[in-house]
Image (tube, rainbow, N blue to C red; front, side, top):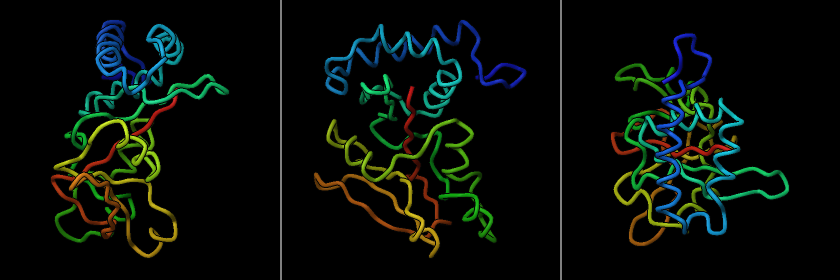
Length: 190
Protein backbone atom coordinates (compact mmCIF):
# COMPACT_ATOMS: atom_id res chain seq x y z
CA UNK A 1 0.00 0.00 0.00
CA UNK A 2 2.99 2.30 0.17
CA UNK A 3 3.74 4.85 -2.53
CA UNK A 4 6.01 4.04 -5.46
CA UNK A 5 8.92 5.72 -3.64
CA UNK A 6 8.40 3.38 -0.68
CA UNK A 7 8.39 6.18 1.89
CA UNK A 8 5.77 4.51 4.06
CA UNK A 9 3.09 7.03 3.18
CA UNK A 10 -0.41 6.33 1.91
CA UNK A 11 -2.18 8.09 -0.91
CA UNK A 12 -5.04 10.36 0.21
CA UNK A 13 -7.66 7.87 -0.99
CA UNK A 14 -5.97 5.05 0.94
CA UNK A 15 -5.86 7.21 4.08
CA UNK A 16 -9.56 7.97 3.83
CA UNK A 17 -10.44 4.32 3.22
CA UNK A 18 -8.33 3.13 6.15
CA UNK A 19 -9.62 5.82 8.52
CA UNK A 20 -13.17 4.85 7.55
CA UNK A 21 -12.51 1.18 8.33
CA UNK A 22 -10.79 2.02 11.63
CA UNK A 23 -13.62 4.36 12.66
CA UNK A 24 -16.28 1.74 11.89
CA UNK A 25 -14.38 -0.89 13.91
CA UNK A 26 -13.83 1.58 16.77
CA UNK A 27 -17.54 2.44 16.94
CA UNK A 28 -18.63 -1.20 16.66
CA UNK A 29 -16.35 -2.32 19.52
CA UNK A 30 -16.64 0.39 22.18
CA UNK A 31 -16.07 -2.22 24.93
CA UNK A 32 -12.40 -2.28 23.86
CA UNK A 33 -11.89 1.42 24.59
CA UNK A 34 -14.64 2.80 26.81
CA UNK A 35 -14.53 6.53 27.35
CA UNK A 36 -12.36 7.26 24.29
CA UNK A 37 -13.48 9.40 21.36
CA UNK A 38 -12.77 8.60 17.73
CA UNK A 39 -12.18 12.25 16.76
CA UNK A 40 -9.12 12.46 19.05
CA UNK A 41 -7.77 9.14 17.74
CA UNK A 42 -8.20 10.28 14.14
CA UNK A 43 -6.46 13.58 14.91
CA UNK A 44 -3.42 11.67 16.23
CA UNK A 45 -3.41 9.33 13.23
CA UNK A 46 -3.56 12.17 10.71
CA UNK A 47 -0.56 13.79 12.42
CA UNK A 48 1.45 10.53 12.26
CA UNK A 49 1.40 9.32 8.66
CA UNK A 50 4.07 6.66 9.19
CA UNK A 51 1.97 5.14 11.99
CA UNK A 52 -1.03 5.27 9.70
CA UNK A 53 1.02 3.32 7.14
CA UNK A 54 1.81 0.71 9.82
CA UNK A 55 -1.89 0.41 10.63
CA UNK A 56 -2.59 -0.10 6.93
CA UNK A 57 -0.09 -2.98 6.95
CA UNK A 58 -1.81 -4.45 10.00
CA UNK A 59 -5.12 -4.17 8.16
CA UNK A 60 -3.75 -5.52 4.86
CA UNK A 61 -2.44 -8.66 6.56
CA UNK A 62 -5.74 -9.38 8.31
CA UNK A 63 -5.05 -7.99 11.79
CA UNK A 64 -8.15 -5.80 12.14
CA UNK A 65 -6.32 -3.26 14.36
CA UNK A 66 -8.32 -1.40 16.97
CA UNK A 67 -7.68 0.90 19.92
CA UNK A 68 -7.32 -1.06 23.16
CA UNK A 69 -5.96 1.63 25.45
CA UNK A 70 -4.83 5.18 26.07
CA UNK A 71 -1.81 6.38 28.06
CA UNK A 72 -2.87 9.79 29.37
CA UNK A 73 0.60 10.83 30.58
CA UNK A 74 2.01 10.38 27.07
CA UNK A 75 -1.18 11.20 25.14
CA UNK A 76 -0.78 7.93 23.22
CA UNK A 77 -3.33 5.48 21.87
CA UNK A 78 -2.52 1.78 21.83
CA UNK A 79 -3.62 -0.39 18.91
CA UNK A 80 -3.56 -4.21 18.90
CA UNK A 81 -4.56 -6.68 16.21
CA UNK A 82 -8.10 -7.65 17.15
CA UNK A 83 -8.91 -10.24 14.48
CA UNK A 84 -10.73 -13.20 15.99
CA UNK A 85 -7.94 -15.54 14.89
CA UNK A 86 -4.23 -14.87 14.34
CA UNK A 87 -3.97 -12.63 11.23
CA UNK A 88 -4.16 -14.74 8.05
CA UNK A 89 -1.51 -12.75 6.21
CA UNK A 90 1.03 -13.41 8.97
CA UNK A 91 0.82 -17.16 9.49
CA UNK A 92 3.25 -19.96 8.63
CA UNK A 93 6.21 -17.96 9.89
CA UNK A 94 8.95 -19.00 12.29
CA UNK A 95 9.91 -16.73 15.17
CA UNK A 96 12.94 -14.70 13.97
CA UNK A 97 15.69 -14.35 11.35
CA UNK A 98 18.08 -16.64 13.25
CA UNK A 99 15.44 -19.39 13.31
CA UNK A 100 14.69 -18.88 9.62
CA UNK A 101 18.34 -19.17 8.66
CA UNK A 102 18.81 -22.27 10.83
CA UNK A 103 16.32 -24.29 8.78
CA UNK A 104 17.96 -26.49 6.17
CA UNK A 105 14.77 -27.63 4.39
CA UNK A 106 11.23 -26.34 3.97
CA UNK A 107 11.96 -22.80 5.13
CA UNK A 108 8.99 -20.53 5.72
CA UNK A 109 8.85 -17.37 3.63
CA UNK A 110 9.43 -15.07 6.58
CA UNK A 111 9.71 -14.72 10.34
CA UNK A 112 7.39 -13.00 12.79
CA UNK A 113 10.05 -10.57 14.03
CA UNK A 114 11.14 -9.59 10.50
CA UNK A 115 7.55 -9.06 9.38
CA UNK A 116 6.69 -6.97 12.43
CA UNK A 117 9.81 -4.84 11.98
CA UNK A 118 9.05 -4.22 8.31
CA UNK A 119 5.50 -3.20 9.28
CA UNK A 120 6.69 -0.81 11.99
CA UNK A 121 4.95 -2.74 14.79
CA UNK A 122 5.99 -5.00 17.67
CA UNK A 123 4.85 -8.47 18.61
CA UNK A 124 2.61 -8.50 21.65
CA UNK A 125 4.28 -9.42 24.91
CA UNK A 126 2.82 -12.24 26.97
CA UNK A 127 1.30 -9.64 29.32
CA UNK A 128 -0.24 -7.70 26.43
CA UNK A 129 -1.67 -10.93 25.02
CA UNK A 130 -3.25 -11.71 28.41
CA UNK A 131 -4.75 -8.18 28.52
CA UNK A 132 -6.15 -8.57 25.00
CA UNK A 133 -7.83 -11.82 26.03
CA UNK A 134 -9.67 -9.96 28.80
CA UNK A 135 -11.50 -7.92 26.14
CA UNK A 136 -12.76 -10.87 24.10
CA UNK A 137 -11.91 -14.45 23.21
CA UNK A 138 -9.15 -14.57 20.58
CA UNK A 139 -7.17 -17.40 18.94
CA UNK A 140 -9.67 -20.15 19.68
CA UNK A 141 -8.48 -22.10 16.60
CA UNK A 142 -5.08 -20.52 15.93
CA UNK A 143 -2.08 -19.42 17.99
CA UNK A 144 0.18 -16.37 18.00
CA UNK A 145 3.90 -15.94 18.61
CA UNK A 146 4.62 -13.43 21.40
CA UNK A 147 7.83 -11.67 22.40
CA UNK A 148 10.15 -14.28 23.83
CA UNK A 149 12.48 -13.61 26.78
CA UNK A 150 16.16 -13.63 25.79
CA UNK A 151 17.02 -16.55 28.07
CA UNK A 152 14.46 -18.79 26.31
CA UNK A 153 15.44 -17.60 22.86
CA UNK A 154 19.15 -18.15 23.59
CA UNK A 155 18.37 -21.83 24.17
CA UNK A 156 16.54 -22.12 20.82
CA UNK A 157 12.98 -21.70 22.00
CA UNK A 158 10.20 -19.22 21.48
CA UNK A 159 6.79 -18.82 23.09
CA UNK A 160 3.31 -18.52 21.69
CA UNK A 161 -0.18 -18.24 23.13
CA UNK A 162 -3.73 -19.25 22.34
CA UNK A 163 -7.09 -19.72 24.01
CA UNK A 164 -8.60 -23.16 24.54
CA UNK A 165 -11.07 -24.48 27.11
CA UNK A 166 -11.85 -20.92 28.20
CA UNK A 167 -8.22 -20.53 29.30
CA UNK A 168 -5.27 -18.62 27.84
CA UNK A 169 -2.29 -20.91 27.41
CA UNK A 170 1.37 -20.02 27.00
CA UNK A 171 3.43 -22.65 25.21
CA UNK A 172 6.91 -23.13 23.84
CA UNK A 173 8.29 -24.43 20.56
CA UNK A 174 11.56 -24.41 18.73
CA UNK A 175 11.88 -20.91 17.27
CA UNK A 176 12.40 -22.43 13.80
CA UNK A 177 8.99 -24.16 13.81
CA UNK A 178 6.08 -22.80 11.84
CA UNK A 179 2.49 -23.85 11.33
CA UNK A 180 -0.38 -22.84 9.09
CA UNK A 181 -2.42 -21.94 12.17
CA UNK A 182 0.26 -19.84 13.93
CA UNK A 183 0.97 -16.21 13.18
CA UNK A 184 1.52 -13.19 15.39
CA UNK A 185 -0.39 -10.23 16.74
CA UNK A 186 1.13 -6.79 16.80
CA UNK A 187 0.91 -3.59 18.78
CA UNK A 188 1.36 0.00 17.73
CA UNK A 189 1.37 3.16 19.84
CA UNK A 190 0.27 6.43 18.25
